[in-house]
Length: 188
Image (cartoon, rainbow, N blue to C red; front, side, top):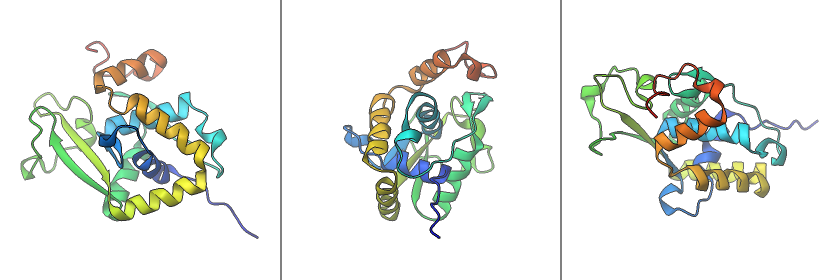
């Protein structure tokens, strides 16, 4: 008996990173884990990705948190994919564009996702597929099929380069319940 393996949250991160984009700067990458998380949220909430996928897909579990919809599944997936060499991660001070070094070791990176701690810089986690990650993402894209990949590509093209504050405003307007615990909803 052949069983079908579901597309899980780790696979979804690879699919989001690997989705084709009309913007060359977005191919194989997403700048910011908060952006990645909001793209995954919109994929769940505003698309028919799950219906279009040829392979069964697991849903993510979002809850209201400091910067809107949050799921630990995205952070866990990114950490795992970095640890096995499918994603490269660069942590960059968003204000200066300079790579963040050891002086930030030991910080709770999840709390620095969008806006950072009051006394810390906003650190953007720039995520990029490695060569092996690109190959795995291509295989996953074949498994979910061209219709599902098209949904991801359209979402990435629409929201991927939008300023983060504008993306957050959009998400908060679409799902005010997910902004209930937001630290920044009144500043957007």
